[in-house]
Amino acid sequence: MADKVKATIERKLRGAFAPSALEIVDESELHKGHAGYRAGGETHFRVTMDSDRFDGLSRLARQRLVHDVLADELAGPVHALSLRLESTNK
Image (cartoon, rainbow, N blue to C red):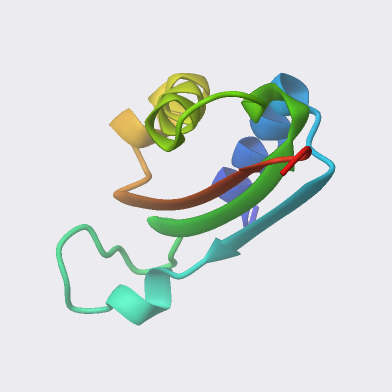
């Protein structure tokens, strides 16, 4: 099934953060020939997300929350994860 890792990331992030906005982009092909690249993609992702769960949290605290939710993916198929995480109440 194509986009299996992306679908898992989306399901976990929606379940944990109920985001008002969520964009997940597979940027794997941009990293062809670099470390962690795998034919077929789903190794390098960019996530942009807005959520009330980030209210009052530092950038580092927001990233840690996301890393905790995606720990299995980061330990396995995902080589790189770029995050832009915003509070809904900016």
